[in-house]
Amino acid sequence: MTVTRSASRLVLAGRLDDAAPLSGLATTDLDRHLVIDTGGISFVNSIGIREWMRLLRTLHEAGIQVALENVADVLITQMNMIPDASGHAEIRSFHALYACEACGAESSPLIEVAPHRAELAAMRPPSVKCDECGGKMDLGDYPERYLSVFRKP
Image (cartoon, rainbow, N blue to C red; front, side, top):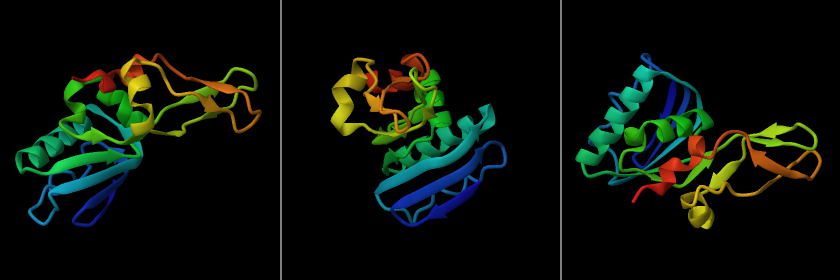
Protein backbone atom coordinates (compact mmCIF):
# COMPACT_ATOMS: atom_id res chain seq x y z
CA MET A 1 0.00 0.00 0.00
CA THR A 2 1.15 3.51 -0.71
CA VAL A 3 0.29 6.45 1.50
CA THR A 4 0.54 10.10 0.55
CA ARG A 5 0.05 12.35 3.52
CA SER A 6 -0.13 15.89 4.72
CA ALA A 7 -1.46 17.27 8.00
CA SER A 8 -5.00 17.46 6.62
CA ARG A 9 -5.17 14.66 4.02
CA LEU A 10 -4.24 11.00 3.61
CA VAL A 11 -4.42 9.31 0.21
CA LEU A 12 -4.32 5.51 0.34
CA ALA A 13 -3.75 3.21 -2.64
CA GLY A 14 -3.10 -0.49 -3.12
CA ARG A 15 -3.98 -3.42 -0.89
CA LEU A 16 -5.61 -2.97 2.52
CA ASP A 17 -4.23 -6.09 4.14
CA ASP A 18 -1.77 -7.24 6.83
CA ALA A 19 1.08 -5.37 5.11
CA ALA A 20 -0.76 -2.01 5.02
CA PRO A 21 1.10 0.56 7.17
CA LEU A 22 -1.97 1.96 8.94
CA SER A 23 -0.75 1.79 12.53
CA GLY A 24 1.67 4.70 12.12
CA LEU A 25 -0.79 7.05 10.43
CA ALA A 26 -2.56 8.35 13.55
CA THR A 27 0.16 10.73 14.65
CA THR A 28 0.07 14.00 16.56
CA ASP A 29 0.96 16.10 13.51
CA LEU A 30 -2.51 15.69 11.98
CA ASP A 31 -5.05 18.50 11.79
CA ARG A 32 -8.28 18.21 13.78
CA HIS A 33 -10.13 17.80 10.45
CA LEU A 34 -8.68 15.04 8.29
CA VAL A 35 -9.76 13.88 4.84
CA ILE A 36 -8.92 10.31 3.85
CA ASP A 37 -9.09 9.45 0.14
CA THR A 38 -9.31 5.68 -0.44
CA GLY A 39 -10.05 5.73 -4.16
CA GLY A 40 -6.87 3.83 -4.90
CA ILE A 41 -7.65 0.87 -2.63
CA SER A 42 -7.87 -2.22 -4.84
CA PHE A 43 -8.23 -5.05 -2.31
CA VAL A 44 -9.42 -5.50 1.29
CA ASN A 45 -9.06 -8.53 3.54
CA SER A 46 -10.16 -9.19 7.13
CA ILE A 47 -6.87 -8.09 8.69
CA GLY A 48 -6.87 -4.94 6.60
CA ILE A 49 -10.42 -4.01 7.61
CA ARG A 50 -9.54 -4.65 11.27
CA GLU A 51 -6.56 -2.29 11.02
CA TRP A 52 -8.69 0.26 9.14
CA MET A 53 -11.26 0.18 11.96
CA ARG A 54 -8.48 0.55 14.52
CA LEU A 55 -7.13 3.60 12.65
CA LEU A 56 -10.56 5.28 12.54
CA ARG A 57 -11.13 4.53 16.24
CA THR A 58 -7.71 5.94 17.20
CA LEU A 59 -8.32 9.11 15.19
CA HIS A 60 -11.76 9.55 16.78
CA GLU A 61 -10.34 9.05 20.29
CA ALA A 62 -7.71 11.71 19.50
CA GLY A 63 -10.50 14.17 18.67
CA ILE A 64 -9.82 14.17 14.93
CA GLN A 65 -12.88 14.53 12.70
CA VAL A 66 -12.51 12.30 9.66
CA ALA A 67 -14.17 12.74 6.28
CA LEU A 68 -13.88 9.95 3.71
CA GLU A 69 -13.73 10.93 0.05
CA ASN A 70 -13.51 8.87 -3.11
CA VAL A 71 -14.18 5.69 -1.11
CA ALA A 72 -13.23 2.68 -3.24
CA ASP A 73 -15.89 0.18 -4.27
CA VAL A 74 -14.12 -2.62 -2.36
CA LEU A 75 -14.11 -0.55 0.83
CA ILE A 76 -17.68 0.81 0.69
CA THR A 77 -19.00 -2.76 0.42
CA GLN A 78 -17.04 -3.69 3.56
CA MET A 79 -18.47 -0.66 5.36
CA ASN A 80 -21.96 -1.91 4.53
CA MET A 81 -21.28 -5.44 5.79
CA ILE A 82 -19.41 -4.39 8.95
CA PRO A 83 -21.21 -1.55 10.75
CA ASP A 84 -18.11 -0.24 12.57
CA ALA A 85 -15.99 -0.13 9.41
CA SER A 86 -16.91 3.50 8.76
CA GLY A 87 -16.42 4.46 12.40
CA HIS A 88 -17.48 8.02 13.17
CA ALA A 89 -16.27 9.25 9.79
CA GLU A 90 -18.41 11.25 7.39
CA ILE A 91 -18.58 9.62 3.95
CA ARG A 92 -18.56 12.42 1.37
CA SER A 93 -18.20 10.41 -1.85
CA PHE A 94 -17.83 6.79 -2.91
CA HIS A 95 -17.59 4.53 -5.93
CA ALA A 96 -20.26 1.94 -6.74
CA LEU A 97 -20.41 -0.58 -9.56
CA TYR A 98 -23.08 0.20 -12.15
CA ALA A 99 -24.05 -1.82 -15.23
CA CYS A 100 -25.94 -0.86 -18.38
CA GLU A 101 -28.61 -3.36 -19.33
CA ALA A 102 -28.77 -1.99 -22.89
CA CYS A 103 -25.13 -2.38 -23.92
CA GLY A 104 -23.49 -4.32 -21.06
CA ALA A 105 -21.03 -1.57 -20.13
CA GLU A 106 -19.87 -1.36 -16.53
CA SER A 107 -18.45 1.57 -14.65
CA SER A 108 -17.73 2.63 -11.10
CA PRO A 109 -18.75 6.30 -11.00
CA LEU A 110 -18.03 8.60 -8.10
CA ILE A 111 -21.22 9.28 -6.17
CA GLU A 112 -21.29 12.54 -4.20
CA VAL A 113 -23.24 11.99 -0.99
CA ALA A 114 -24.51 15.51 -0.21
CA PRO A 115 -26.81 15.97 -3.24
CA HIS A 116 -28.12 12.39 -2.93
CA ARG A 117 -28.39 12.07 0.87
CA ALA A 118 -32.18 11.49 0.95
CA GLU A 119 -32.03 8.93 -1.89
CA LEU A 120 -29.17 7.06 -0.25
CA ALA A 121 -30.90 7.00 3.16
CA ALA A 122 -33.97 5.51 1.44
CA MET A 123 -31.75 2.84 -0.20
CA ARG A 124 -32.35 4.27 -3.68
CA PRO A 125 -29.20 4.47 -5.80
CA PRO A 126 -28.69 7.71 -7.74
CA SER A 127 -29.36 7.44 -11.46
CA VAL A 128 -26.31 7.17 -13.70
CA LYS A 129 -26.18 7.61 -17.47
CA CYS A 130 -24.13 5.14 -19.53
CA ASP A 131 -21.08 6.73 -21.16
CA GLU A 132 -21.16 4.13 -23.95
CA CYS A 133 -24.77 4.26 -25.19
CA GLY A 134 -26.43 7.00 -23.16
CA GLY A 135 -28.84 4.54 -21.54
CA LYS A 136 -29.71 4.29 -17.88
CA MET A 137 -27.29 2.30 -15.76
CA ASP A 138 -28.40 0.24 -12.76
CA LEU A 139 -26.54 -0.45 -9.55
CA GLY A 140 -24.59 -3.65 -10.18
CA ASP A 141 -25.55 -5.30 -6.89
CA TYR A 142 -28.19 -5.18 -4.18
CA PRO A 143 -28.54 -1.65 -2.72
CA GLU A 144 -27.71 -3.05 0.73
CA ARG A 145 -24.16 -3.79 -0.46
CA TYR A 146 -23.52 -0.09 -1.10
CA LEU A 147 -26.13 2.03 0.67
CA SER A 148 -26.86 0.56 4.13
CA VAL A 149 -24.17 2.71 5.71
CA PHE A 150 -26.21 5.82 4.88
CA ARG A 151 -29.16 4.66 7.01
CA LYS A 152 -27.22 5.36 10.20
CA PRO A 153 -29.09 7.50 12.74
